[in-house]
Image (cartoon, rainbow, N blue to C red; front, side):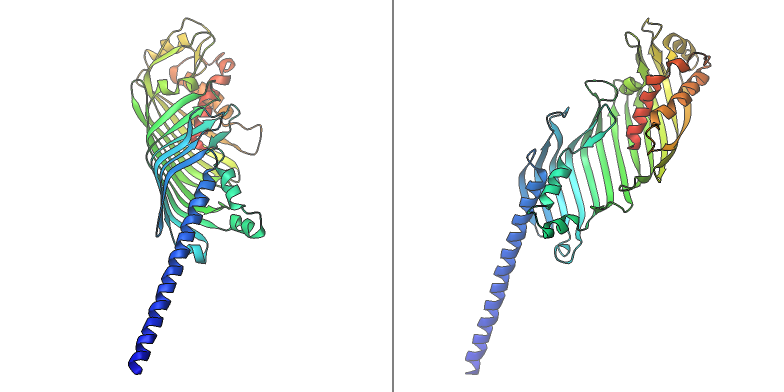
Length: 375
């Protein structure tokens, strides 16, 4: 009798364990299904993913694509061969939701700057993510949308970023950054009121030289407080041609040279302080024949004559200061007089009449710096 009772107890124990396993598997399959649905809802009608593989603690998306909207200058806003989410599974129960990392590999990202200066990235994704959070329409869904989500690190590897700038020309001027790597550390969603570390590096290939670009520092995204450093090294002048040259008739041509630049920007309470330097190396320009054409607001003929003795290096220092809330403040405008006067002084050219030609030319450099500063 004792042996029969023991066997019966063992069978009950095995049955309970099997039942728990079945429930656990069923629960996990439900979680997997919910994850897949949520991902597809977040990508929205312009997004697609060929495969979603959910392992315990890891979600892998293969061949992800987010198509650009109708007014987008590129076919895709983003695509990636693989995106891997490393999920802290305990956080699905204990909250807040915690992702140890999101890694994006073999990717392409397009970024658009409109004529009015607005910068757009991943168009529509924020709206579809908000809609996914709000489905179904209930207080619980609203609370879910507002609950904290923590991402330790987002990384971008082996990719390229393409900038389309409508502020300098139409159709938009295109700058491609290859070998682009980027990291974003410590994201607290949706508030974004914690300090986030940011870094980006890549290469810009020009007609004669391949230069490098890097940007990094920290930012409190909600308040825009930040401390960042932007750097250009050996970037072909011709790559930034629309920012530097303005023409009255036919464009004066840059035939050689590179640019080095550093900008250290601090934003506190919407006020910016950003000292920097711009160096033109081995600059060469040709005469278009139009006396009204300028380079950095210096008449082309005068600039060419002065450059005969200054082809090695020309350095311009500047400091940006202003209130980002003031609609009259412009980073590009604040650079205009300083860079024009500095370039004229460096070349030994009289500044008489130079101010009259300032306007759009030096504003172009300001726009380029504005893009790098992310303002």
